[in-house]
Amino acid sequence: MARGGPRNKMPERPPGERIKTFEEVALGYTEDLAIAEAERCLQCKKPFCVAGCPVEVKIPEFIALVKEGKFVEAARKIKETNVFPAICGRVCPQEAQCEGMCILGRKGEPVAIGRLERFVADYEREHGEVETVALPPPTGKKVAIVGSGPTGLACAGELAKKGHKVVVYEAFHKPGGVLVYGIPEFRLPKSIVQAEVDYVKSLGVEIRVDHVVGKTVTMKELLEEYDAVYAGTGAGLPRFMGIPGENLNGVYSANEFLTRVNLMKAYRFPEYDTPIKIGRKVAVIGAGNVAIDAARTAVRLGAEEVTIIYRRTERECPARKEEVEHAKEEGVKMLMLTSPVRFLGDDSNNLTGMELIQYKLGEPDESGRRRPVPLEGSEFMMRIDTVVVAIGQSPNPVIQKTTPGLAVYDWGGIKVDENGKTSVKGLWAGGDVATGAATVIKAMGAGRRAAADIHRYLMGEEEWPAHLHTDGSELSC
Image (cartoon, rainbow, N blue to C red; front, side, top):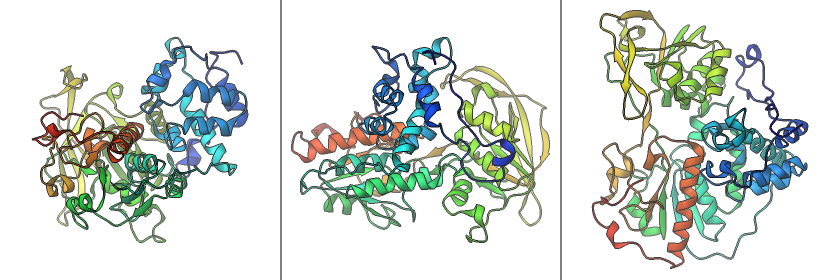
């Protein structure tokens, strides 16, 4: 194939088949498709794609190896900066990052970097070629990582490879954070996450589950026991709309809904005793990736009609375009320029319907998107059995409220400098708990930067800055 030709399509399960199963939708490239896609790469002398990657994967180099059929070598080239390519190849918004910077995208379609990343990672794992990393002699230093999501695991892996003893504290009964409780099986199989967790454990990292830092153990106790601590607790606190009826049975936060289905396997009830109520008609409020995940999950749980309700237009949807298209293929309806104003219930406190109002788009707001303006007199009623509210998440405040001297933002995030240092000596933080909800790869990038900084600190290469022992006013994300 000539360079810059048409992009190779990803093989997928047909919609009629996939709505009946939680098995993965995208089936992955074959060897021939991967090589054909790699041949599209122009091998730019100034690869803008690398600049678009939060962890600076050596993209042209790994693609050149794919073109030569050196798939294992390509996977290892990626792992020089990204330890979880099988995950990132599946869930990263490449279209807004590496692929968004690809020069081919200016006049056509960019190279399918994410699909190639997924292919080589899967190839390496499936052929038993995952390399055991040679570890340096122990440094004698101990680091605690709070949270086993993408930022915590990335930080843990990097520190372990430097010879430090690393212990990860996880609140849930399984490690993985948002990778296991937030992303559905049909987008990211749990077996993939487990393989990556096992890789981190193979580096000598210890993971202690069912430990809620701030409750089971305090941050003060960790700082006394360990030489450094990294907080990567994510943004798992759901946001609600603050409208009447949100406490009715049948109204879920997306966090509860997806956690119950993904981590607690409600979709396999009664084999797993964690049922979840799904009626005939389901509405999901919001249009981000979490909302799309919830809607597609509801379809698979047997809902007859699933509707995404969003107060802007589809053009402004924060979700990945590919995921929106998958949802529509699976029968999910899109009700745009609309939002609920109250939920209605019966005498038993069960959800029966909702009142909605329509909007028009006004001037852009601080996000750059046009602000939705309600249309007076446009209210209407809708019969509904289940509602999933997916309008965003905030950091859980348990660490912030139980750690004296920790500088935080008004919205609950922990203030950090460019390397993740907080206002508390010996404590770093990163990922969604510092930035608000973002992408998996950005959280991993924060973990890698913090790990490098922690290592310098532990090795005595730098002192803790005295100016951080203030109100944290000089800290910023």
